[in-house]
Length: 334
Length: 293
Image (cartoon, rainbow over the protein chains, first blue to last red):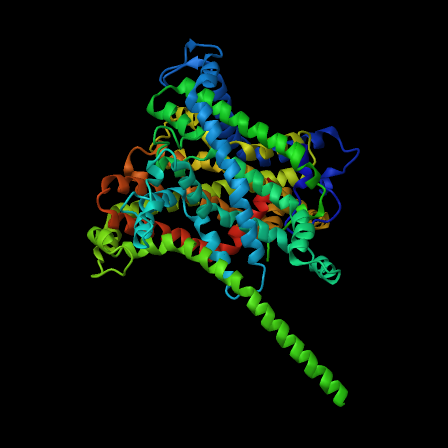
C-alpha cells in the first residue's frame, strides 16, 4: 500500500510541490504546546470519519475474526470454542472449494472475453461515427441500474420456453439453441456471465475511453507517416500506453467477481445445486439461513483475506510500475 | 493560375476519394455498433413494452406491440402506496448516506491533505486499505452489531454502514483534490484572520464544488442500488428501498409477469433519469475512483 500516497494526485493538474503545503506544516522551532494543540486540531477533523470507519468497518472484521474460532448460532455470546475447526471445515467444504473455482471461472471469462470486448468497443467509439455519443451513453447505462433490477429482468428474459430468449430462437426456427439457461447446472454460469457482460462492459469501456484520451494523437500521426497500419498502431501504441488502465480494469473486474452477490441471489440464489453459488452467497446462506454464524464468520475472513492478499499482491507486482507512469494519472474526461 | 487551379481540383478529387473510401470502410463499424446497441437496448425496450401488455399477450404476442394497450399495470403501481413508500425510503437513505459520507470524508481529507501531523500517513493508509475491504465480508458481524445497537428496522442501520464503507474512496479522491490547491491561498487566508475551519468552510469547500459533486453522485448511486444491507436490516416493510420492493413484488406476483415488467421499468426510471442528469459527474467519478484505487 506504500504506493497509494504517491498515486493520489489531484483532479486539477497537481503542482510539483509535495504536500504538506500548510503554513502550519513547516514551522521548525515552534513551542511544544502549540504543536500539541495543532495535533489535536488536525486529529479533530478526522474524528467523525475515524469513528464511523473504526466502528462499522474495522470492528466488524475484527469481530468476525474472533467469532470465527467459535461454534456459534448468533445469539447470546459465543462460548463454544473450536479453535481452527471452522477453517479446517472450510478447506473440506465442496461448496466453498466450488465457490473458489466458479469465482476463478468468472474472472477468466471476464478477462478473456468481457474486457477485450469492452476495449474493442472503446476503440470503435473513438472513430468518427455518427451518433457515437449516444452509443457511449447507451452502453454505459446498465451500469447505473441495480443488480436486483438487472437480475429480475434477465430472470424473466431467460425464463425457459416463455422468456424472450427462447421465444426469439423459436421465432427464427432455432429452437435447438434455446434452453434452460439459468435453470440448468451446465448453462447457468455462462448465462450469468452474459448478464454481467451486459451490465458491466460499459463501465470498463468508459475506463478505456478515458485512458485512450490521454494517448497523444501525435504518436498515431507519426506512426502513420512511418507507414504503420491501424492494427500495428493499436498493437504498438494504443495497447502499451493503455497498459495502466487495462491493469486497473482487470483489478476491478476480479474484485467484482470475488464479491458477486446481488445478481446471483435474485436470479438463482446460487442454484441449481450450487452451480452458480459464489462465496458471498455461501456466506449469506450460513449466516442468515442456517444460523451457523461461527462458520459464516470463517467464510467472511476467507473472503476478506482473499481480497486483501490479491489486492496487495496485484498492486505490488502488477501495478507497481504504474505508480510513476505519466499516463496513470488520467483525469476525469471533459 | 491554371496550374494552381488544377492542383486544387486534383486535391479535391483525391480528398473526395479518401472520404468515400473512409465511408465505405466505416460500414462494418456501423454494423457492429448497431448490433451491439440493439443487444443493449432490447432488454430495456422489451421490459417497457411488456409492461403495457397483459400476461396472456406476453406469451401469445411476444414481439409485437401491445393490442390492446394495458395501462393498468403502470397505473396501479403508480397509484399504490407501496411503490412510493419504497421510492421515498430510497431517497431518504441515499441523501442521508451522501451527506454523512461526504461530510465526514471532506473533514478527514482536509486534515490528511493540509496538516502535517504525526500519524498522518498511517491514518491515510488505513483508509486507503479500506478500499479493498469487501462489504460482504463484514455483513455477518455487522448484522450482529446492528442488532445489539438496536438499529434493525431503522434507517440509520443502513445509512451508517453505507457511509462508513463509502469513506475510503471519497477520502482518497477528495484528499487528492485538496492537496493540489496552492499553499499561498491558505497563507493569504490565514493572514486575513481565517482559522483552519474558516479556510476549510469558506475557501476550500467552495473551490471543491465540482469534485464534491462527483463524490456525491458516487455515494447516491451506491446507496440507491444497495441490496444486501437493507435486505438484512429491514424485515418490516416500512423502510424497504426500491431493490427490496422489486424482490418482494416479484415474489408476491410471480404469475403476473407483465406487472413485474411494469414495476421494473418504474424502478429503473429514477436511476436512468439521474444518470441523464449527472452523467458527467458519474463517469468522472468512476474514472477517478478507479485510478485512485
